[in-house]
Amino acid sequence: MQTIEEYNFAGKKVFVRVDFNVPLDEHFRITDDTRIRAALPTLKKIIADGGSPIIASHLGRPKGIADKYSLRHILGRLSELLGVEVLFADDCAGPEAAEKAAALKPGQALLLENLRFYAEEEGKPRGLPEDASEEEKKRAKQAVKESQKAFTQKLASLADAYVNDAFGTAHRAHASTALIAEYFDADNKMFGYLMEKEVRAVEKILNAINRPFTAILGGSKVSSKIDIIRNLLHRVDHLIITGGMTYTFTKAQGGRIGRSICEDDKLDLALELLQEAKEKGVNLLLAVDAKIADSFSNEAQTAFAPADQIPDAWEGLDIGPETEKRYADVIRQSKTILWNGPTGVFEFENFTHGSRSVAEAIVEATRHGAFSLVGGGESVACINKFGLSDGVSYVSTGGGALLEAIEGRVLPGIAAIKN
Image (cartoon, rainbow, N blue to C red; front, side):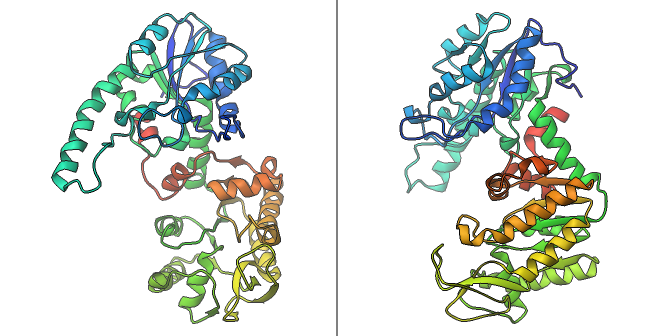
């Protein structure tokens, strides 16, 4: 498989799929440019070689052309960070994009307009009335798929080589993330530096495990983590179930959880997963105590209680001190660690302590040689909030993509390059 480090981009026009889906304020100013900065090594390598990057991304979830989702808003910051004036095309697959791409000189860069202004990018029909019949929906979807091929060909025709550096969209079989790769031979398509790091991190977690391997899974719903839990039960030595999911497992075993979040229709599933862990010899840990509150608020009255004896008018919003100690003891002894999901409502300052204790234990284990991967939106927000991201092995930029990879699914954006 071709690698970006070995490839010489001199004289090449390169279609680079990045993830510049950055947050903008009401004045269209970027409030967090992390995703742009993450793609800079790839873009700078192409320019330094004497190549010309044709930069493509989505922004938001537009239902057609809309100024607030225009990538023109990020042009100035991108040029500043990249150190060259980036040109802009008001389209991504029209005549202007083709003309500007053709005219690019070595070392110049071009930013295309939002890919998702076209329904063909995602392969989803738009403009259907809410009361459309199933037959109408089927015909509309088929029409989009037929036009998606022509759209993909237009994107591919802009360049001599293809680089995918957008791990956050790797789980989507979109025109620019998977389908376009078919138009480039194996010697002229590759991962960008960011994508390479993401793929290596996931592969290490799934296939190159130093034991003990501990996974910490938070989140509010068991239903959203079923496939991840089941896949990890085949791999881990310790599985820490935390966050709101705790209370579904606790109630399933007869515990009193007060007003804590719970999926009552998943109680039998929770018992099945507990039994499955036991049969596989996995040490599945649940909270033994909780920091409880009399309302869902940072200003709520708080107390500590056994996790299975929460009073009726109270709810668990974080783990308690005994649980913190138990989790930290397991984490510190681990050699491979995956963290996905906080221990509590970390957005409220009074309920951050559990997540911080987990983060600090991961950092300590990493300092002693463990490989640690933190991924999933809230976990990343946690580690950044605590200023500890530099203390772990890798912080993943891909939310949904990372979760699907951990579930054991083949990601289209990765398979398109590898195959």
